Length: 116
Image (cartoon, rainbow, N blue to C red; front, top):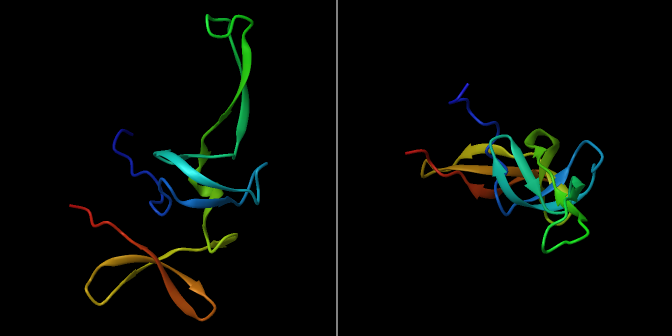
């Protein structure tokens, strides 16, 4: 179980994504971090947490935090609001790239970093 592959590598930190299922369906946000198959997206899956009394909050308080979302519930967002299905293609130099279809042509999203 320790060295299991961690799902799709199409989504990474800094990408703009759209939720395709769940309570946040249709909402757009930016990926803040990723750990395995879970992704934390700014503004999506926000939950309230009750914090105990402390020196900086003598009465306690309620804070809102983003909770992780599974990568299968997200799609990469391109050109504003449209979600794109990314495919892996190899160019003439042999480098792998993520591409998506725009009409009848393929547009390069970014290149895939080769494993060492």
